[in-house]
Image 1 (cartoon, rainbow, N blue to C red):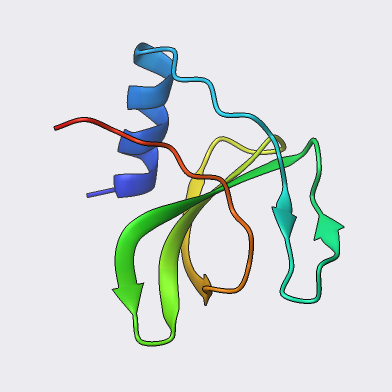
Image 2: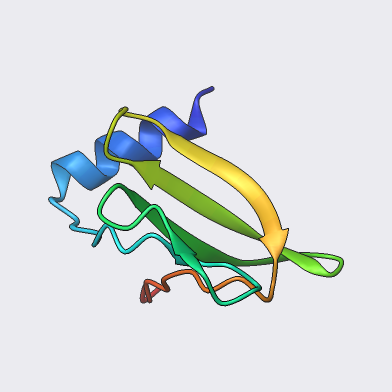
Amino acid sequence: YNLSRDIFLLAKRYMITVPLAGNRNTDGSFNNLSSNANLWSSSESGASAWNRNLNSGNATVNRNTNDKGNGFSVRCLEN
């Protein structure tokens, strides 16, 4: 089972658009502007939280944990 592939295909099928806003680091600097979309999930992992990363250079969705002090985008979904 490939969750990343399924998320990508759902986004493609339903034409979900996600701005490539990059992210703000804990020191206040920014990176990956115009190339990555980093989205928080609602799942925590200790002092960190899970996020999804979409990169304009490939067709996969990565799942990572990051410090909650980072600034990532949020996409609200309704159940």
